[in-house]
Amino acid sequence: MILNDDEFGEVIVRRNTLSRGIKFSISTSGRLSMSVPAHTSEFLAKRFLNSNRKIIRTKLPVKDPETQRARDYQKKILMKKAKEYLPYRLEYYANLYGYHYSKCRLTHANTRWGSCSSNKTISLNIGLMKVPEILRDYVILHELAHLNHMNHSKDFWSEVGEHDKLYKVHEKKLKQFGPGL
Ligand SMILES: [Zn+2]
Image (cartoon, rainbow, N blue to C red; front, side, top):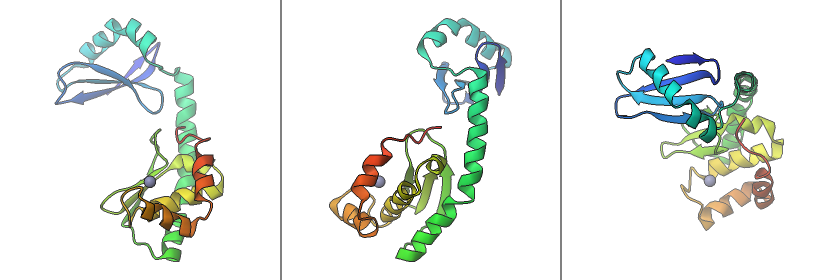
């Protein structure tokens, strides 16, 4: 459920069977998000929101509605670019170096550039479309190497180094950018 609030813009309400109380958080788009017990009505959700307005204002960095919409737009553009590029780039390097992954997922989490799960799904952050190609390639080679090493051991890094000799420089440079939008 979405509440349209004059002050906070679109407020995401998630009904959660496990939650007893109300919890406020910020979604990746900067929207206020509320987790409420399963059978909470819209009326009650609005009342919770109103009675917590002051504390939300001081504790949570809710972005104003205009910024939220600008971010949505940026995400849409990046997602489109990423869809046309990242899966193919991943496939290219996998073929080149003989890696086998099961699936490529595109994500937009604020915290990581990519990940590789034990079922061989490789996730790549659409924010990669904002960084130089060489760093994008580094992330791809890093995640591919995780197919053989699910850790950051010495063996893992030496495999990354086989395909990207400057990986240490690239890892460092990547820190100047954030995966968030
Ligand atoms: Zn890693």
